[in-house]
Image (cartoon, rainbow, N blue to C red):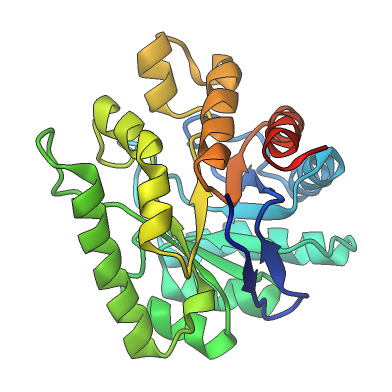
Length: 280
């Protein structure tokens, strides 16, 4: 069953994470993201897509200005700012009040995004990149989605103990910066430096990860990823059925937030899964 977590936000009412799963809709404003690069690059396109996802049931909008797909190029700080800050301004200017997450590993981008109206920092380095990231989160009281990404993994790495060691380092960094435990949401980082077998082992063992960190909510992000494509030999646009399967299994195993491209389909699947566990 799902533990309940109250996660304070700097600009909006706190998130309540528990039996009701929350959906994070992906808004990539990049030219090269693996699935939807170049589709939402103008402000009008970004606002339209965000509204559509909210209408379909998204609870959070996650804005990313730099792709982390394999082979992608690093984006300079100013270029990333030029991509994401106008989008945050446009969403808030259009009257969108839903929580916004900024998907970045750059402290300055996180800082400016929160000042512009974002609420959550989504850090693919799990606070183990630039040390200022934890300080930015502490300054604004912003929650951090701390993703697991350990590039030293190989095919022999045992996922769960290695992930526990990784998150122990993340928690130590957070504690040193003065972050409250309620500010940290853990993300296993499906697809990041993990073999196909490791990805599915992590999904299978997700209850053990949830049990190891009872103070923290867990985010599951498998949408359209290669762990589905490699298994089914299909392209990103063909991975919705596989995504739904991982979303439902992630929820049944204790996940709280689900980062997806296809909001409506995952919303319906999660509603059925919730009714199965807790009643309609």
